[in-house]
Length: 216
Ligand SMILES: Cc1cc2nc3c(=O)[nH]c(=O)nc-3n(C[C@H](O)[C@H](O)[C@H](O)COP(=O)(O)OP(=O)(O)OC[C@H]3O[C@@H](n4cnc5c(N)ncnc54)[C@H](O)[C@@H]3O)c2cc1C
Image (cartoon, rainbow, N blue to C red):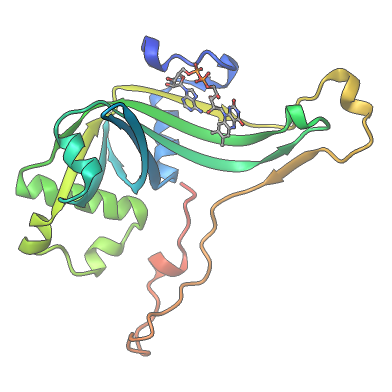
């Protein structure tokens, strides 16, 4: 269990706080979309993007022209969040409605992954994080594509996770209120892959696509 820094200590509903690194990494490994928050000229922006994790590093990538990445490159502070929705929590009162979720917040700064082999390795980490098995099966980035891509590494040092599970919690007086209460469980499920219209019809769907799951 890591000690939370002052900025990542959960004060609202602290019983939902998780500071265990492995537990936070399980959330990061199940997700594949993060939101990167940063401030420019006093205006906060929160930009969704894909990511990959390896060890204590989170990688994001994109066009070298991306404003988010260009500014991350300057070392501005960022806040990266990942959220998994496990269900809607229907309480008897609207006030006590909630969601079951697992979320992670990381504070830090990013560094550019400059060196060519590390850059390719980081791109593979992102690719394998989103869809394991795809990297080896697809054409890998060429020189031109690598030049056009910026890859950033954020060291996962200051972080927090918050997890809500279980049924609604109503005020005692509301338990007799005549309405339905409970959970609508939710998860991210992949449907059957749809072949590209220009695909050779003889080509079979690879198992990493037909068996795709985010469950880890
Ligand atoms: C899917 C979802 C739905 C939610 N719906 C609501 C809602 O409708 N209303 C509402 O008030 N809150 C909601 N929350 C909780 C919300 O994320 C905040 O935790 C809560 O609002 C308290 O915010 P705060 O700034 O007072 O947190 P504080 O406890 O003051 O935050 C201090 C530090 O705790 C950490 N932290 C706070 N929240 C989280 C988090 N969710 N995950 C990881 N670390 C965190 C951060 O490091 C932050 O810097 C929801 C969360 C999720 C994931």
